[in-house]
Image 1 (cartoon, helix red, strand yellow):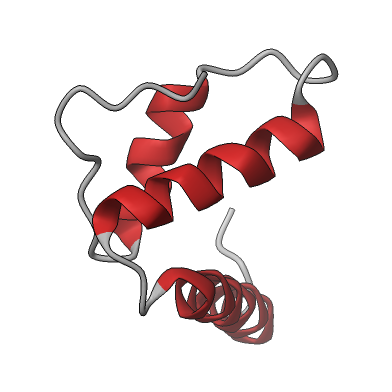
Image 2: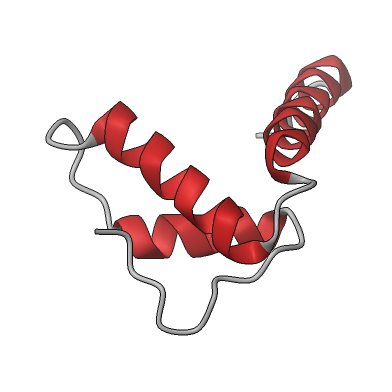
Length: 76
């Protein structure tokens, strides 16, 4: 079933706004500082509530913001 254009536009713009807000928070940080920041935020928000692969989540988020996960980095 095809979604109406207003539905697609609304959800696409929301996704872009969320990405811009999130990436804006780590924009000026070097890769290691950004990874530590995201690691801390993820652990504080979901640790013990939602089972996720934190290292994978950090990689996806940092890559979406144009950052790289430093070699050997593990969120501990």
